[in-house]
Length: 136
Image (cartoon, rainbow, N blue to C red; front, top):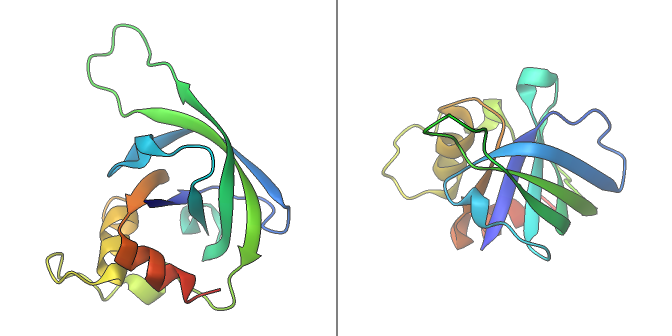
């Protein structure tokens, strides 16, 4: 399984990224060292969407806060960039894909990243992985 992260990325040209205490959803908590991850620079923080593919080089689960019953699991990961995207993919390109049950990989990404616009790590299907690979 591959993963995707939407996060605040200040410098998209660096080769190593550190993402600290990131929220996980849709299977994102299963990310591990060696996994492929597609990196989206969050449009909420001025980014432009998909810009890199990389490999997870370190992983650490973040302990939950005491006395809070329901918490979204969080993890800290480091990612080594392996490729830069050749064409854009972000909220504006995925916006029209809103039939949540159509089985399309672009719809999956729109649902997981933009229906609830918080930054997060998500697990993605093989179809979504192949779709994203075409951007590199």
